[in-house]
Image (tube, rainbow, N blue to C red):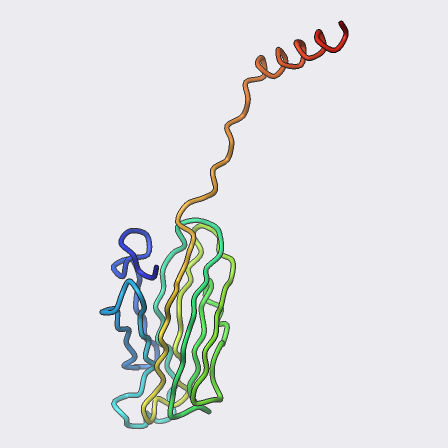
Amino acid sequence: MLFRSGAYAPSNWTLKSSGGGDGFVVTSAAPTQIRLASSKANGVRVGGASSSTTYLVTAKQSGIVSFNWSYSTTDPLYESFGYMLNGAYKQLAGLKNYSSGLASFSVRKGDVFGFNAYSVDQSYEGSFTTISNFSAPTEDSPVPAPLPLMGVAAAFARSEQHTSE
């Protein structure tokens, strides 16, 4: 579930905006979904300035992050949505008014990842993306403890005694 209490609770995420933008995130429907909005500068063109609205968190463990997304905009040539991983942007939506999909990618413990709504011009109504069915690693797979060497040697010694009789 998205934004459950603990590792990926909304309080552990950081909302950042570049380019003087007014993008935002709505978490009131958590833990089921969130909604990320790109900047629209209150509907007034801001001299062609671009803006990114990012919602970021640090991976608690290594593993796979996956989520469903549903994107809409009235400004398809100038808006996009995707995910961030350690500062790199992977675009998932743009150039269409509506699109949706499933995304997944690998993270390592300590990686910074999240969601990004990008606006080329901060005009019109921006874009809105609903993110649901979020899953991220919360604990490593258990690793078996090493066997004591004397126990292993004794097991082999007993095995040899039984086979040579």
